[in-house]
Image 1 (tube, rainbow, N blue to C red):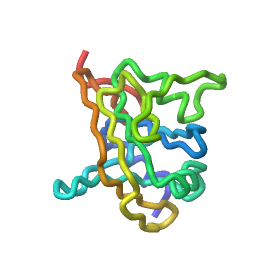
Image 2 (cartoon, helix red, strand yellow; image 1 turned 90 degrees about the horizontal axis):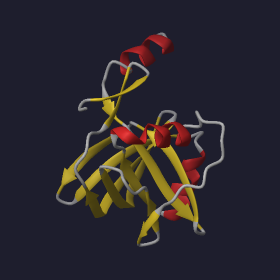
Image 3 (tube, helix red, strand yellow; image 1 turned 60 degrees about the horizontal axis):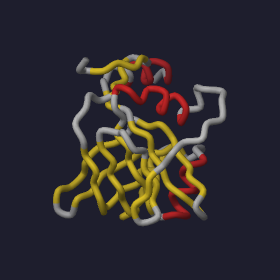
Image 4 (cartoon, rainbow, N blue to C red; image 1 turned 45 degrees about the vertical axis):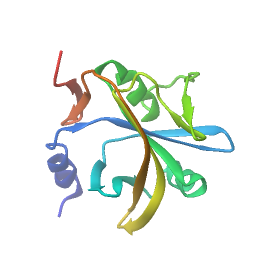
Length: 153
């Protein structure tokens, strides 16, 4: 199967946009991702998919904790920054729960400890057990066919 066609078809699935964050020795590491889903209500589990080539993979393995920051429509620049699309160095202000960084002003922050991980092709699936949740009203940042948008104005 043609890899470009596969990527094009996967781009037809509209998603929210997240930034995954973790810390090792108080140094914050993050990455933009849309491969995120809920897994279980009891216990409360979520899943993220990380490329085995991504630097974040080794940091998640070291820290054993991460946050899924679900971005608001006003955080497109955060998504671009953590995706490496902006060629500028920024001082990002994080807040912390249980030595785990999160991005304030997101519509939701899901703080997790790594519950399990599974190698799947060229990615690793990390299952996170939810430890804390922060939630606020707002419109989500969305991604469809390689473009950012929002489902609400």
